Amino acid sequence: MKRLTTSWPILVMAFLGICTIALGAPKPNILFILADDLGYGDLGCYGCPDIRTPHLDRLAQEGVRFTQFYANGSVCSPTRAAFMSGRYQQRLGLEDAVTYQEFGRGLPEDGETLADALKAAGYNTGLIGKWHLGYDLERRPLQQGFDHFFGFLGGNHHYFQHMDRIGVPDLWLGNEAIARQGYTTDLLTEDAKAFLAKPREQPFFLYLAHAAPHFPWQGPTDENKLVEPKKPSWQEGDRQTYIAMVERLDHGIGQVLAKLDELGLRENTLVVFSSDNGGHTYSRNAPMRDFKGTIWEGGVRVPCIARWPGVIPAGTTSAQMGITMDWTATFRRLAGLGPDAQHEDGVDVMPFLTQKAPSQTRTLFWRLTNRRPKKQVEEGRSVCQGPWKLIEYATGERYLFNLTDDVGEQQNLIQHHPDLVQELHQKLDAWEKDIAASTPN
Image (cartoon, rainbow, N blue to C red; front, top):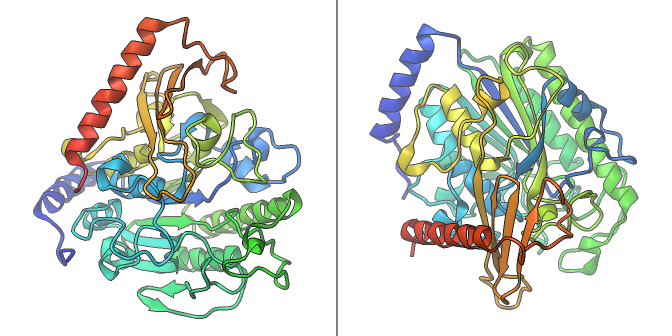
């Protein structure tokens, strides 16, 4: 059973952080917005020609836009687990998605999450939207460090009937199942605005995890569209429907940002926007290759925008390589919590964003394994170090790309750099050995 009190290490680190913050600037509010299955090229500020995203485009103009930012996984649960833990998801045994109504799997019941740490550091914590990290009571948001939860536990759900893909109702307020009418994106927006407006003396951490634009593909006017559980209609759609979903997502985010302004919270709030993995069927991942569920760039490279007026220079673009779990480390530092060397794989990106530190060469890893034999998964692993990316599949296929010259991964250079291939291969082996040592049985 998950502990009911915060562990001593976090209390001590929180105390030290509070002392540090007290001597300097106040702790910032943190708003982390995560889209679901949004393609790298599906925003205007990322070159999209047919989707209007004025609010996210403006966010990029007011802050920094990343060009080489990655999701921890190419599907939902792994990336979310990495964000909550600050570690490679493989260390938690969450290499693929938690399936519908799958009990006994998800975040560790007795683990420490980012929400736990920020709550101990004095933050009011909220999750609005998609959880997808476990159905068991001890794995749910309120038991994992959040003060407020409104949303759904499963991987996706009907945008109007609020049931999951197998027909089970899935809409929650705290630990209580509820019924509420409306389009999911709009409901999440309204709850986010209400959360921001709550009187509080402490800073807040709001994790706004949107359902959109994950299937079922239903725009805000598609209430009467026939979408049935366990039926092909659950994944039937078209680009126009997808566009309507993304544009409504942008509209809702615009309302949330406007609420920050209305409440006078803009100047002391770090806003981060990203996606949990690459886009799916009707998305635009250009100029990346492939899509969600693969370790090609289209499966793991995602849009990412950050804004903090007066701290992050406005209108900037960053080629610094980053990954979802970096935000975990970053948010901890902003809360006054020091490095967690034993349980942290990400890095604090604020020195790069504030231009107080030069860009850093990173080495990042991905892996896909097939836990469910009936599901078709291309088992493989990859490592990206600077401009170089090595992909190795279980079938024996190997690829080496220079992403600076070939971001679309079209020219396999595996025969041209044998020493580099060997070096990257050894790093993959060492990484797998390291995560195996910490993965639960």
